[in-house]
Image (tube, rainbow over the protein chains, first blue to last red):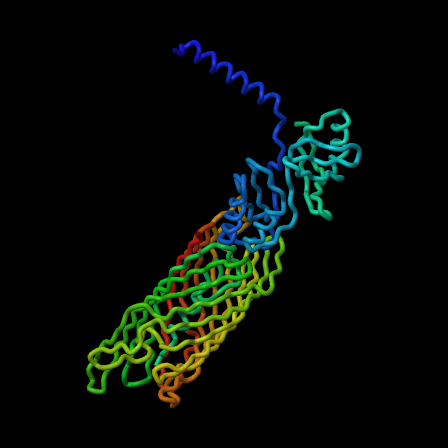
Length: 170
Length: 296
């Protein structure tokens, strides 16, 4: 016969175990936020197609379109979303993607000027130049490799390269 | 007779994105998506130089479906429901009313964006289109007085190819559209309506909000001014040219357009600046349009 005390013991032990795992696991790494400059967007009715295409991307939430500035922004709540599918979604909506600004969090690998941000799975982004690159190098040098960076991202050869405009310890 | 004037009016209701009210646009339809447009069109033509004193009224409710097959390719389908009525004075002096109602001819066409120049808050596009009007509407409709004239038949019975080119320049403040097109009318039931060429222009200017656009995707009200020049060749009946058919019409169409993220509500009246039908053809009074578009 299982007593109430036994049940409470099991529940408590399970809760403690979950807590230990949560503390021990590395923080999730990802591109958390996108801002995309969309050229050719000039009317509300056309903006609906863009909003819909962006919402269809995996993990995308809180899509905001600013007609006045021509920028679309959204959060990525789960998974790893690289810029290529974002560009494809903009093109599918009938527009032209230009600059893409991201906020990404993860573990910085490498040292000196050769820094890469691991954003989950085997996906990495090269971190290169920008106003806050020096600040990022300093953080890494001090051993703070778990960071949040913001900046323009673009494809260089086969690599996504982020120009670091802001960097901080996570 | 004003035989196919409304066929033309219906084919060119095909724009389903925001844009002109009386003809098409080159603006994008996003891939794998559907836009529906419903219109109510009222055409009245009562300027009759003949002793028949014909009064033609046509109410058309075309349903337009647009599918984005590719970011640059859009497929259009248009099926109108028609009510046509003509009051005419017979040689006996009696005034009679003849009418018909039902679905008209189905038109389908494909539009391909050949040129796309996108800039921040601005786009310029050029898109050719080709299509076919199919004889799905009833022909040979008769009443107590015999077979109805072509102007009152619901369908033409003919397979009519058409094509053209649309230019669109859109900015946050205004949009300009220009279109040229041609319809080849083919023979059916010993009747061959005249070919048709037309040129259209539209200028839409945002009046609400008047100043800077606010945050997000606000709703806009456009003041619209459009113009349409339509030339139609003579009809042929049993191979004989009908001198009382075809001609030139030039319309000016002021209108209003309310555009939101998912819907467009708009109205315009096409007023004839010049209505010059051949022979004893029927001159037009106006074409009024009320339209609703929704983005799925």
